[in-house]
Image (cartoon, rainbow, N blue to C red; front, side):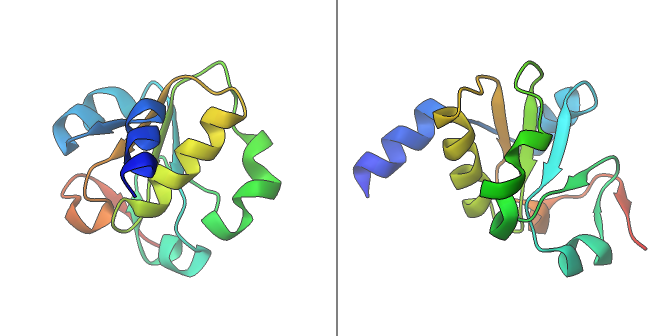
Length: 109
């Protein structure tokens, strides 16, 4: 478990909501929650690539731009960032606490 936490800390920058808001508009914002959760509400401007499909769809994310990831609690987005790091992505960020603690702008269908 310690080794996994160490790898995660090197792969992804953990951001508070304030820091996340400062940078996500200039980046690729990816929601890794499942589609049904995404449709009930998501951060304005986010694209949905569910974690269950991430291995097949990660190429939809450009490696030359910053990537801001989030999920419901923060665990899956951190694991998605670790996978992207292994694939050569460098600028990876995720929302501390996930969407559950988000109080910014939300879009719902």
